[in-house]
Structure formats: C-alpha cells, structure tokens
Amino acid sequence: MEGENKYYSNGDHQIIKTSTSNISAQVFSIEPTQIKAAEQTNTSAHTIDHDSWKQVGLLLVTSFNCGYILTFSNLMLVPLGWSWGITCLLFVGVFTAYANWLLAGFHIIDGQRFIRYRDLMGFVFGREMYYVTWILQFFTLLLGNMGFILLGGRALKEINSEFISHDEDDVSSALRLQYFIMVTGAVYFIFAFFVPTISAMKRWLGISVVLTSTYIAILLVILVKDGTSNKNREYNIKGSQVDKIFNAFGAIAAILVCNTSGLLPEIQSTLRKPAIKNMRRALYLQYTVGLAFYYGVSIVGYWAYGSLVSEYLPKELSGPRWAKIVINASQFLQSIVAQHMFIAPIHEALDTKFLKLDENMNSMNNIKRRFILRATLFSSNTFITAAFPFMGDFVNLIGSFALFLLTFVFPSMIFIKVKGKTARLEHKVWHWANIVFFSLLAIVTTASAVRLIVNNVKVYHFFANT
Image (cartoon, rainbow, N blue to C red; front, side, top):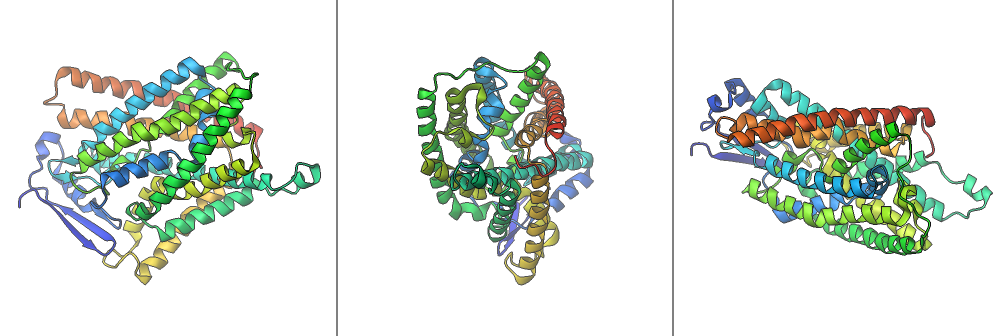
C-alpha cells in the first residue's frame, strides 16, 4: 500500500523500513538524497512501536522523580527566592510541556516516522543539523549520566556515614566519595547490560514506583517536621549583584533539567500506534502527576531550610537515622532504573552500529559486543565523575545551551520549515519569537554555567572528596 509503514523484526531487534512514496520533497525543500538517508537511518537494534502510553507515562513520571529532585531546592529556588522562583517554575513547566507537545506532533511527517531526534532534524534541515542535534544530545545525555552516578555515590556515602559514630576517629575512617562512585558506575553497568532497551524496563517500573513513593513520602514527612520546628530559617538571596544575576540564570537552566530530557523522539519511538496521540497522553501524565511530586519536594525543601538548604537534601534531615538510610537506599536503587531511560539513546546508537542486526539481541556475538560497549561507556563516565564531583555543574551545564535548543528552539524551527507556507502569520511570529528568545536565553545560561565551573575549579581539586 502506498505510503504505508512496514516493520520487520528479528527477536529483540526491530528494523523499520518506511515507504517515502507519499513524501513531498518540494513542500519541505528536502533533496531526494536526504529522503534516502532518512529511510536508511530508520534501522534500530532496539524495540520500536511496542509500548503502551501508560507504560511510557509511568516511565516518565518515575524517571523525572529520580535522585536529581534532591538537589533542586538548592539549585532552583535558593538563587531565585520565593517570588521569582515560583514564577519561573510555572513558566518553564508550562512552556516545556507545550514544546514537547509540539515536538511530539512531528514524529510522523507525511507517513515518514522519525525514531530519533537527529533523524528528524536531518530530514528537515539537512546533514549539518543531523550532526548538530546528535552532538547536543550526546553531550546532554553523557553529562546527565555522570550526574546520576554522582548522585548514587552520594547516596551510598550518606548511608555509610549513618553507620559510623561521630567521634573523630571513626569519621576519619569513612570511605571517600570516589569509592561509592565506582560502586554506582558498576551497578549501572550491570543493569544496562541485562536490561538493554527502554521497552525492556517494563518489568522494573513497578519496583521503581514503590521506591519512588517510599523515599518521597518519608522525605516529605521529615521536611514538614523540620520546617515546622525551624524558626530561624531565612530566604535572602546571597552574593553580589553580579553573582545574583548569574546564579538566577543558572537556576532557570536547572528548572529546565527538572522538566525535560531532550530525547522525546527516542522515547516516542517505543510507542505503538497512534504514536503522536499516545505520546501526548504520556506527557499529560508527566506534567500533572510527575510535576506535582518533583516540584513539591523542591518547594517543601526550600520552605523547610531556607537559603541554607544543602545541594543534597538528605544531608539536612534531622532524622531518625533509619529514615535517612531508607531515603538514601531507595533513591540509590530507584536511580538504577531511572538513569537507564536518559542514557538509552546512546546505547541504541552504539548497539545499532556495532551489534549484528541479523542476529537476536541475546545471541552470543551480541552479548559479547554489548558487554564491551556498556563497560567502555560506564568506565569512562565513572572515571570522569570521580575526577569532577561537582553536583551543580552537571545540572546547570546540561540545562543551559543544549537543552534550551533541543526543547524550545528546534521544535519552533521545525514548525516554520514544515508548516511555514500554510501557517497563519501570528503562528509564524510566535515561533520566530520563541527561536530568538530561547536562543538568547541559552547563551546567557551557558555563560552562567561556565562561570560556575570556573569558580568550582578554583575551590575544588581533582578527585575531591565532596
């Protein structure tokens, strides 16, 4: 049938070949060679067109309520204060939901399904934008994974600190952060090896829900108790005027990290038809249920401790000891599942490039290759994380240049390119305004992130035991 998508699968691999007979190259000013390239790149070693919207929605809710939310009281609200903080939370949350809703609508263009963000940008804008998009995603996902490894290491270190007494001799015998970072990297590697794809995470989502609910519930109870008893908290924004300005833009970047990932087409590729409608259903779940929890924890944490709140919230908790251990343990175990979604596109790219696609995912050849690929990736990420254990840098740098472009700028560019000739004038003006405004914001927040890194390099040393 003309224009029909045809799917061929082999075991856990799924290869997509899409007819391009009904694609109008003239409408989108796309050369025939670009159409051919788009068709060739729609081949994946991972599962496509398989999952329900409820599964993906649950994946989004639990993954975005990962250990990162334990840092957001400090990173998002301390530099902004109450008024600007709440305003920016609402503004960025609404705009991010809208931008992802818009991007989800371009998953299929004239019958052509795009399973990767870079494929979509390359199809619409050419080869250069294919590589620009992939570099931005690669940069974002790698840094995000390093942040997860650091969070996991900190959780384990906090657990260790609860099992030693507070006299000087025992404290000095506590293990360095780098040991816990290595353990975290090893555990993430094992999970990624045995659970190779996003779709394979289905059986783990129930466990993730229990762990997420456990540590958030206990955390909120203690935060309310501490906030009620803490009469000396204050919410003044500290620093010079220049510091306040740069830190405020860094906080806006952190809010963006809180809400989006820059890999929506890759997540959407796992959804069964209708992929656009199902992705938007999953997004509704994320930006209602999911957002209520990660914003809630951030706001209550800031309310409880004020401007002195730690960049890792469990450090502030008054106890009891068992609660702090359960929170950190649950966060660590939950992060094993959550981090996998954010690094999966890199696994998919490596698997599609190096695995034998004519064999089952679990064939002996592919198991060996997958082991080497996962081990290489997590070994390098773990080493870099151990060398640069600066929590705020990861979050702000991720949300600055790359995520602003991937989330806000590129979807509006696609709209103008694809629908510009038929769209109403006010729609084109709206999307051009988005492109200009968020491009400028990306530049400013990137400058803020670089400034933070420079300052931390002066304060910390390599392999610092933070």
